[in-house]
Image 1 (tube, one colour):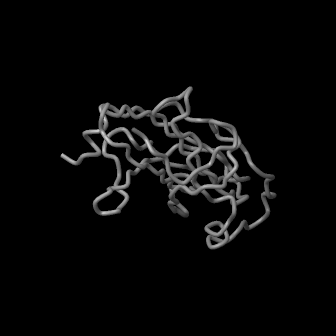
Image 2 (tube, rainbow, N blue to C red):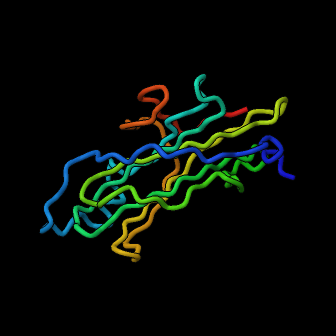
Image 3 (cartoon, rainbow, N blue to C red):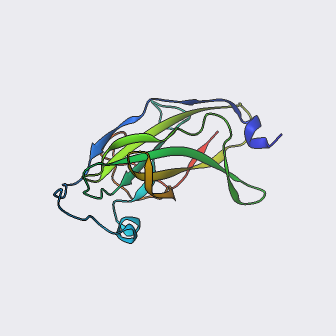
Length: 177
């Protein structure tokens, strides 16, 4: 058994932080930004906004931001998941149980949106700490058709509109254990 799994007794997906509009919207007549512009947008990011604070022990919050296309009829979705750093191989590995959400709608693609998920881990006492990061997958859809999908690992230096603990916290990784 991989040692990281021995460190976890349970992993629970907590309630999501709300999606919030982060910028103004474009008019219905606009053709919207190109796919390349969306992928290079300063509004496209992922961050750790909760990392084991005293009032939420062993909790990791992952938050994402994605730019809107300005197109009516398009909806944006995010999926949140956790990875741990395998200290032997120095490779990020997906946690296998309970450490990923389904894709959740974060709203119409009229403007940039933020949303997040918190995960509570229960480490086994006496086991070494491990390093986690988040990965957010972003989708822009029209109906059931995925127009564009991209994933981003968590990085530091972002402004969460809600849910950060403490306020304005933003990190690339989070040690737990």
